[in-house]
Length: 141
Image (cartoon, rainbow, N blue to C red; front, side):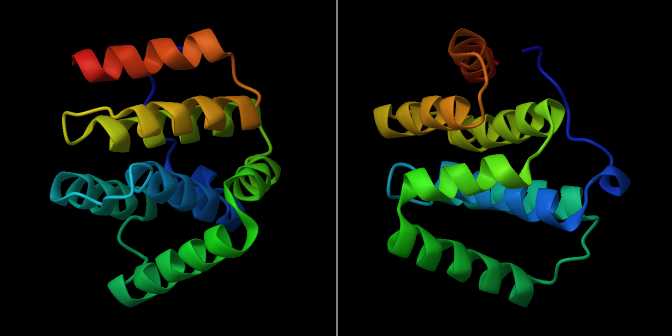
């Protein structure tokens, strides 16, 4: 899985965009903390992906919904939902890459974050070795 950049905004439909934002948030919150570095990277990434068309109030509501769904359904169900919404292999790879970028943004990859990303790779049917390699390369850069 080569390192990649996010797709152009016009190629993202609403379900893909929401799934990307949800996965990035899940990655940022994998260790139970949402550090300042992770918040900044998350906000910048979402702004870039959405071309700033999601206002902060809408983003706050989306995050509240993600947290509620996570508490109600659990991580396995949310990851399965992501797989359904990220219907193409390319969308899944990009989503994984963006989530990995959020995880490494604070310079520390905790065990819980690494485990989440490997769970994400499995749920999205991505090669585990390639996923681990992406994470390793991002952490080293």
